[in-house]
Length: 389
Ligand code: NAD
Ligand code: MG
Image (cartoon, rainbow, N blue to C red):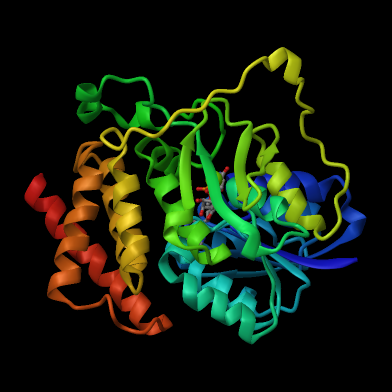
């Protein structure tokens, strides 16, 4: 029996993981499950998976969660510190599927305990890639990518020599607005941005897919995780979302990973790694699909890609600035403070301001200065949002 914990168990990725785990409950000893507001889901899963510990990140919901699990011996805890404490429980494998930079400290803590970390929380690599990779090395922990593109690259690299890699291509569906006239984008509503043509995901990543901030984050994630130079990483628009990534080698070969848009593939690959096993995902009928299409991304439609490229080139703490400003701008769009196109304006303005004013680019990357930078970037983004509003 493998001991496992799931961080962000109640979210879209967390629930896909639970779907896999619940099919073979005898294979897993579930230690901790963490969630947020959806206490019913958290309690239901803790009960059926016989978890030792259930944690909500909201301290004021402790009593409610406690009441939901009163007739069990499942331990209950609440608050951000309790989420981090759950990451100190010894396990063999943990899923990092919290959304946003709130996933950083729990992920780092799991790595510092030598845990194999299946990483869906891309924000932690964007914010603190060097720190995360350094921590994994220091404690002999393994990080397995769960973002579909990065899982695809990881799989294409099995048995390969990184020195033979020439290019890494991550694909993008183009998101909700890929066919919208450019002049209509400014008026895009929250509801319109919250539906994805191919993937069923949490609301924040769905909106980030419409703006292509998601792909921008994935560029940075590629650089940090696979340690490849910026110039080797490409984005390709591929509407069908069936090829998730390709790796190009120095003999001209491109190894493509093809599969249905179902996160249970990437999660299942990480769950069973290093072996492959049966997964309940659709088998593609390529003859019925007929054709796969590819286009170069239109940089005027997707300013987030150019911003992310700048962040990759700048390095240092610019990833932390970028991620925090993006998270605050996304809150601003969700709350109706700013329009869809303003999100990129806010992120760019925060990067401009903080790289010149605060001289943060050259600082060494420690958890303290990342958290300070994250907090400051959110304040700066809030100031810019109120100027725009
Ligand atoms: P989601 O919004 O559906 O779920 C987020 C989870 O995090 C929930 O369990 C929620 O309770 C928890 N959470 C929210 N705020 C928290 C906080 N402050 N502290 C602790 N826990 C908190 O999100 P999702 O779509 O499942 O995405 C999770 C992560 O995986 C994100 O980083 C996302 O970018 C990444 N990802 C998601 C998909 C996908 O298909 N959904 C694909 C690739 C990568
Ligand atoms: Mg992805």
